[in-house]
Length: 121
Image (tube, rainbow, N blue to C red; front, side, top):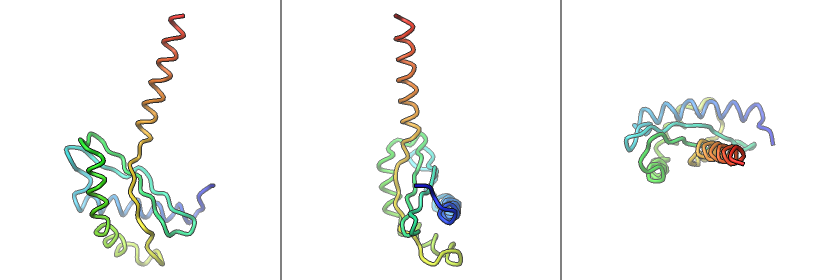
């Protein structure tokens, strides 16, 4: 299902503000790596926000995600203060590891293997 205009607007506002909050709280640099928000998806009723995080050179992404989830109340509190004039209610925040880059790498490797196998025949 396609995202509506309002969903995209809310997602853009949340992504911008959460990025700033991550930098302020020191969550954008963790375990010797960098954490960034790759995308924010909002449900049509605007009650749930799924935040997908991209981990670059983070030693343990699962532990970093757990740290972020443990501090989600702090993130939500600050986010609520920032968007209180733009949203009627604050969506429930859920954080997930964005594995699309891993998937792309895996698919590229599969295509290279197929091409190499075809050339050897």
